[in-house]
Amino acid sequence: MAGTTKVAVVFAIVVVFLQVTCSVSGRPTVREGKFELRQNVPAIMTVNGFQQGEPGGGPSSCDGQFHSDDEFVVSLSSEWYADGARCGKLIRIADDANLHISARVVDECAGCDNEVGASMHIWKNFNLDPSVGQVDIKWSDVPDE
Image (cartoon, rainbow, N blue to C red; front, side, top):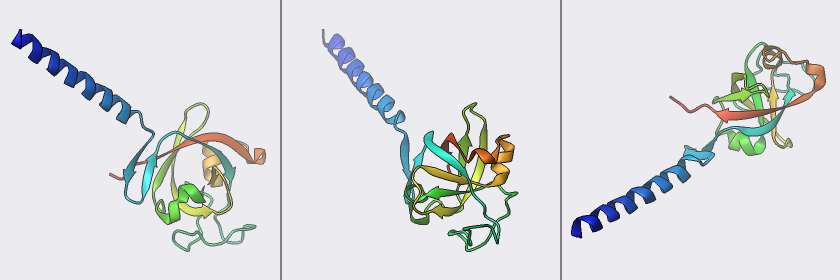
């Protein structure tokens, strides 16, 4: 009988551990540095120009530089920009066909909600027509290695 009790206790502990592990691994975010890593966040991708002389554009918030529209660069809504904590970090953008492109965060899109402003290069690589203006995407943080 004592052996049966030990097995039951061990089984109960394993079941509780598995339940805790499953619930933790299902969370969409984990802490790293000043922001939470996010996975598969629904967003709207818009066309954004990062070159000098483009309408409404200025140097990027992250490094004070202009960037070529031939780069994989993005701006993020203020909430996701996280007061600059994502500056220089990579995000992975996924389209509705689940094709992925990695891009570097270089700017904040102040006053935007749920928006990823993407360079023309990203639009071209997704084979999207920029005249559409916006498309639904999902984005994820790429953890630092």
